[in-house]
Image (cartoon, rainbow, N blue to C red; front, top):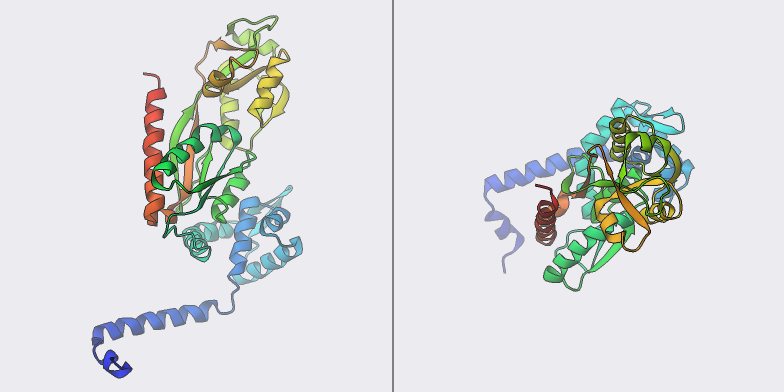
Length: 338
């Protein structure tokens, strides 16, 4: 048995010097943050994501008053307004944007450690956050890989409401392990992999009184249309691109976030709608719908797989992502027109 003095005597002066430097550095850092409540950073991130004190309070399970108090303390600490009222939303100042960008990776790593999301052993459950439609062709790939590497792992599907804030909230606060979304999440602490591209097609009911198999610009201008409801900037961009390609502003009569609701409305009315080629092929024999060939080539909609970089430090998660990516890329190549 080696006593304390003998053990210490065998440690080289260089090692003792490094330990001392590390201790001094940590001591200095403790002094810097001893009067700063690190919980304020969680409140800051929630407000930054939701652009609303009330929504941030709901996400964190605290009162709006507590959020206001936390922002007040942060404003004093940083000597900056941080968020400025812009209509109904709170717009971040340049200082707030700098704080968010500077802390993003470190904050993500800290949350991962605190929540013990390390997957040192095979996990018993994985949470996937995406819309019901995207889940149709993504979660089955995860299931296929898990059957191979973790057959007892449970998959939990958390439904996205087409809200950017929901997806950001799920990523930052670790409510989901993987997110599938229609827009990339640009961050130093996250990975956004392009795994698929969805091709839009115009549809109407088979018994449409004026249309059969094709649609001209002039006909499109005379008909009523259905839009997909989403906060996604990329979907809005695609909608505007379609209007520009058709050289008209389509008349909207119905808006819904649900492709099933949209396709049901098309079947029972004279309205037109865009759905994806994949969805049309699955539903064309179950609904009274037809595809309309158009004079223009429509822009495709990318699909991304998003996850936190810190999770890749674990061998299980890294293997899961790599094998899923291989399958997605193979399917992507097989479905890409040549």
